Image 1 (tube, rainbow, N blue to C red):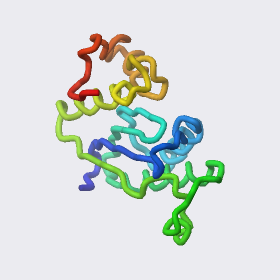
Image 2 (cartoon, rainbow, N blue to C red):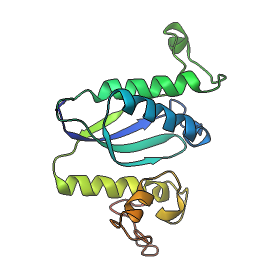
Image 3 (cartoon, rainbow, N blue to C red):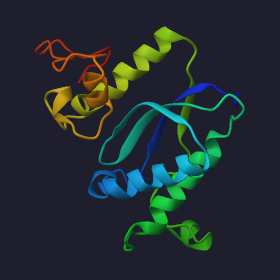
Image 4 (cartoon, helix red, strand yellow):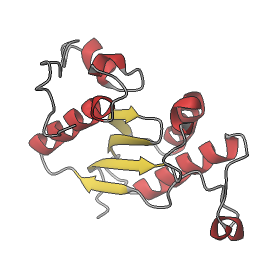
Length: 170
């Protein structure tokens, strides 16, 4: 559902979930997002980048609902600037696609403040959930650090020993 000015949660995956392109080439991803935001602004409310996928919450401008365009631009810019060498299926070759990203992504219209808060927690907890770090603050590719800097979250947020999970079981 495309609603101008709405807030959405996204999950975007690499085509090959064993690859680590997103953190290996984090500066390219940042450049792709910057390129897109310059042309089609949006607010990044929260985001985490993991080796093979990312989660983000975006708020679109009041007169704009076109998040598919934004994701297409980000994915295209990143793919065009990524060094070549990945395996491509014949269906990707036939369409002149690089095969970096899954064609689809998950989007969810954020319904209210509770829904927003749950998705922010999910985003920030995700590196721990996937076993990349033991503490949220140890993952560098997350808006968690902005939330701490702005006084929204404590530096030790999410750390309650073995019981921390935010609705997720490891």
